[in-house]
Image 1 (spheres, rainbow, N blue to C red):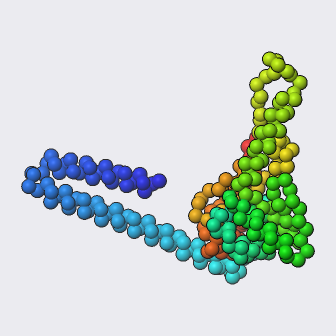
Image 2 (cartoon, rainbow, N blue to C red; image 1 turned 180 degrees about the vertical axis):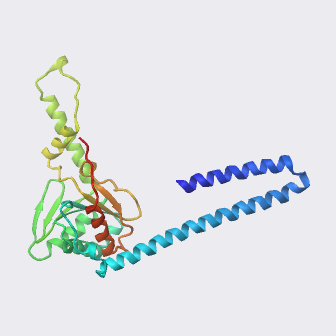
Image 3 (cartoon, rainbow, N blue to C red; image 1 turned 90 degrees about the vertical axis):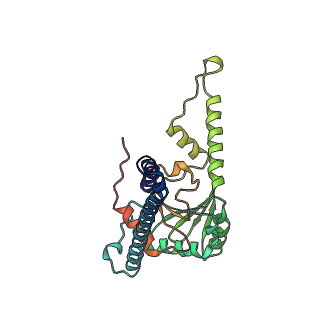
Length: 272
C-alpha cells in the first residue's frame, strides 16, 4: 500500500515536471531535459524497488535461520510450549497442494509430537477428505466416526476433522431451513406474525441443531499462495488467529513451532 502510494506521487511528479519543463525551458531544450528527468526518476524507482527486494530477502533469510535454530533446539524458549490456549487448531491448504499426502502426514506428525489434541484439515475441493481419510483409516487401530458433514478420525493422541467448502454451503442451507421451520411453526399465525429477527445466538444454535456447529478454532494456519482462509466456515473462526505459512512444499517445523509459540503469548480481548 505504501509503495503504491509512493509510485502514484512519483508519477504525478513526473507529469508536473513535464509541465514545468514545457513552461520554463525553451523548445529546443525541452526534449533533452525531459529525457534526463525521466531517466533520473526511473533510476530512483528502480533503486527503491531493489531496496525493497533486499529487505524482503533479508527478512526471509533471518526467518529461515530462526526456524533452523528452533528445529535444532538451540532456542530454549521454544522447547516447552504452553498449549493451554490451543485447544483447537485448523490447517487450511490450497487444493492443488493438498494432493501432496506425504507433506500432510508429515505436518500431522509434527503437530502430534508438539502435543496438539484436535486438528481440523480443510481444502476447498475436498482433496483431503479423500486422501487423508484413506491413509488414516489404514493406519494402526484408528476409530473412525462419520458425522453429518465432516469426518472425524480419532487417533491415539489427536482427533482429526476433515472439512471442505461444500460442508460450509450445506451447513448454511440446513441452518436456514431449520430457522425458517421454527419461524413457521411459531405461536403467531396469519397477519399477527412478526417479521423474523435472528440473532447470532439463533444462528449458532441452528448450526448445532443440524450437526454443523463444531468448536470455535483458536489458531488457523494457511498453506498456499493465497493469504485468506479459502472459504473456511466463517462461524468457526470468529475469534481465530490466522497465520499465513507459505507453501506446503517448503514448510518448516520451526515455522509451525514459532506460530504456536507466538499464539500462546498473545492476549485476546473478546469484548463484553
